[in-house]
Length: 88
Length: 274
Image 1 (cartoon, chains in turn brown, yellow):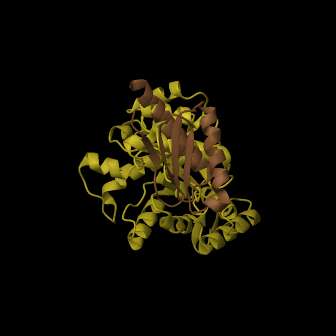
Image 2 (tube, one colour):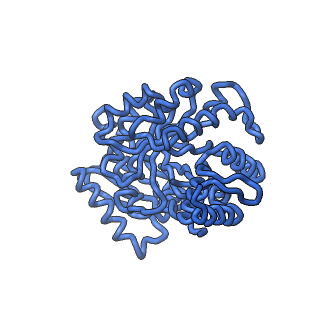
Image 3 (tube, rainbow over the protein chains, first blue to last red):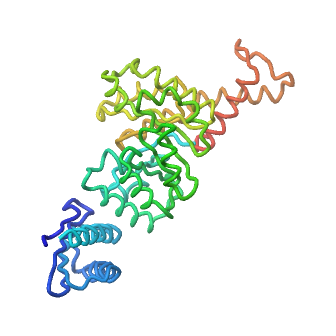
């Protein structure tokens, strides 16, 4: 199954890529990683938990997105990911 | 009662999180024309997570859903809006038939602003205006002129019939008559002419697709100091004059003029100029 990409690299947004993986992996690139890396990771982890996803790789390219944006982009990515999974 | 309604795309975070700095009285988060077909789900989720965390007293928040013609999108839009703190929804291609479809989808009564953008709707506009959940109309001139195969002009004579129909029906039902956005974004003199035309016809507000237009709309839909002064004189004279009919500066003043003066002062108070 191919990767799903949601969001953008515009200011205040983030680009989320989700793909199947043998384990759970979260990769974050952010200009504010030093200050907010843990917070971003926690937002992503909470959403993954809510959807009971344990075998995916989430790559988050952050451009200063607030929590609600990261949450929304990831939810959309997961919904599309699950839809693609059901179709394959 | 609002002066300005600003459309912002529902899938752009930097617009959503700044919606209270544009100084519009009302913001319409858009799920329809400004959101690409393959990004509708992104707009729904983004708006949902945003409004779950942010509650606004001002501006009033509306969401333009997709029309009932695209049923699946319309249905998903309404589901996404459930339990969000919004003032109402904006319905594109409003018609009596579309309201029947919408009624079945909505879990509870909600304020609706209908966009009048098809020639057909002008034959049922008064019935539509009196629909209990209808709080206002927006004239959708772009789609309407496209269907009529005519061009929009600065003078706006091609919109005279549609504007007047909307304004008369809205006034008869005591709902808002919101004029169409002015789409030549950088043409400010053209915008001002357009605002003055719609206001002179009786529009109560104007929609906009660019934040830079909001301050002009607010300015022209706020009572001017000259209007306020005249209204104050009329009210004072009316209080002194038991007959409710008198002359002021050679003009005949009677009950409708006095009521209009009271309404103007109320509006001026609301917008902080009195």
